[in-house]
Each structure stands twice: as structure tokens, then as C-alpha cells.
Length: 104
Ligand SMILES: [Zn+2]
Image (cartoon, rainbow, N blue to C red; front, side):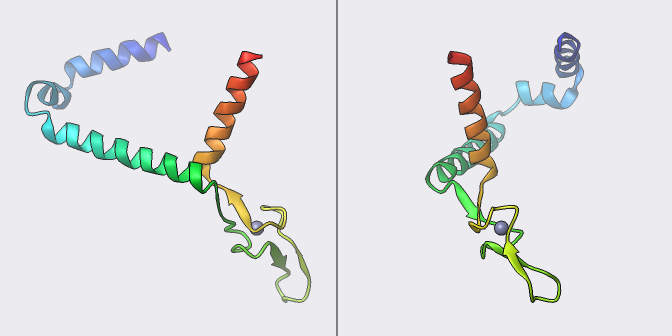
């Protein structure tokens, strides 16, 4: 970890591109960062309001057929619900769980 931090500090010092960004017009960079932050915020908010997405394995039906289409079984990926937790929400749940465990 310490090695990595030293490497980053060294490369920002040496890298002419980052040097140019630090000294010249920062507005386009700030705009890009702002847009990215907004997109991340929007995604986080959408994960909060719509935690589930359609299961890709069974296409939201909750069941899977054998190749010949005769035998139907509950989808193992979504356990027959047809819904899957979104990546952002899954991540949020993991972090929230960790925090709960840490506070205990
Ligand atoms: Zn499924």
C-alpha cells in the first residue's frame, strides 16, 4: 500500500499530462468530473428506488426450460422470482452489512 502511494505521487510529479492539467485550464476536467459524479449519483439513486432488475438468465420469467422446451424449472439465478439485485444495490448492501458488523 505504501509502495503504491509512493508510485502514484512519483508518477503525478513526473507525468507531463497531469502536470498540464494541474497548471492549465481546469474547467473541462472539472466538467467531466462533475458529469461523472452526477451520473454516479443518478445511478446510486436509481439503485435506491429500484433495487431489482430483470433476471438475465430467465429474462424475467423466473423459470428455465430444458433445451427441448418440455421441462420447466425455477430459475436458479433468481430463485424463481425473475428479479435480480442490481450491482449498485448489492454493493450498497454489502457495505451496509460491513458497517453494521463493525458497529456491533
Ligand atoms: Zn432468473
